[in-house]
Length: 168
Image (tube, rainbow, N blue to C red; front, side):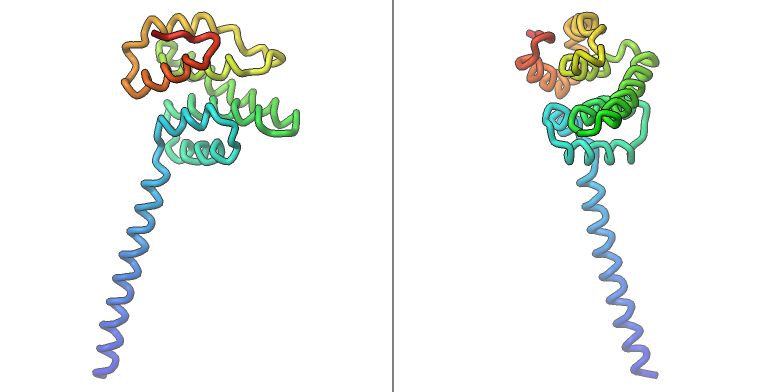
């Protein structure tokens, strides 16, 4: 009986430590997978399919109205990096639909327009996705000060490489 009590105590100690470690490691994993706007925009500007997939999985975990625009932009970017023409077209259409739908719902959102500029500026001419470039660039320039300071920095950095978006 005395032995069983000792084993029971050890079992509780080992269980408590194991549970605590699992909780700590799972929390660390959740923090690592938080959405970060700067990371998103860095990923959008690079041609790394793995990073795009990572951002897409993070965005799908969040699943909010705002993330629809991010997901749409990433899907269109991803379309330019995959090999199969049919998959390219389907991905681009899916991303296009997501981004345009959210812009229709919130046409005054400057960040959504900025996302569209990034995609339209680099979209192949064959997809004919460049009709809103001038309008979006004007809207972004006129409302630049309304963006968060982080997004202002991202937009300024982008505008230095852009041929269509020029910011002060």
